[in-house]
Image (cartoon, rainbow, N blue to C red):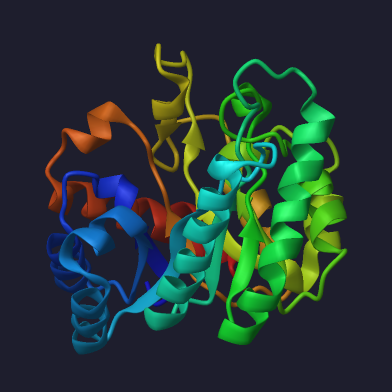
Length: 275
C-alpha cells in the first residue's frame, strides 16, 4: 500500500493528529490534508507532526474559488490562495488542489466565471513556481457547476493548464468527477505529466438529497476503476492514490474501520492496475 493516501475528508471526524495516527496504524505512507484542520493546530505544529510521523502529504486541499469579479471578495480569495501555497510548501506537499468555484450570486454568465478563474490562476503562478508547488485544477462533475466548479471536464481543465508550465499548473484526475466524461481516456493520455493528483471514490445511486455527500467507497458504485487506473498508469504517473469520500454513512463509521475497508478495496480494485 505504498502509494495509498487517506484524504482527511474520508474520515471527517478525525482531527489532524488522529488522521496521522490512523494512517500509521493502518500502514499507510501518505495523507492528503485539508487546510482547516491544519489551521486548528497551527501550521508549524502540523509540519512537525507530519515530519515526525514520516508520512508524505500527497496534496493540500483546498485553494481556488476564484470566479468572483474584482472587489474585496476576490482580493481576499487571492490572499487565501497565496497563504495556501505557503502552507503546501511548508508541509512538503507537491500540489495544492484548486476547486474553481461556482457562479457568483446573481450571475448567469458561466464563461465569464471561467475566465475569471483562469485569470486568478495566472495571478498565482509566479508564487507557486517560487514555492515549488503545482496548482492542481480540479474539474468537477457538472452537477456542481453552479455552486462549486465551473470547470466540468478534464478537457476544459487541460485547456487552461496548458497555458502555463507543467511545473506550475496541473490537473486533478478524480474518478468521481470524471468517470462520465466522453473521451476521458484520451484526455488522461493528453494530461501526461500534468496529473498532479489521482483521487478515487465511487459514483453511487440513488444520489442522496445532498449531492455533495454522494461519493461512495471504491467498488460500491458504477466506476470501472481497473480501466481508469490503467489509463492513469500509462501516463507514467507515479504519485499517490488519494481516497477522498464525502458520505454521511462513511463519516458515521469508526475511522479505523473506514481505513481498513478502503485499504482492502484499493488492493483489490486499484493497486494491481497501477503498473
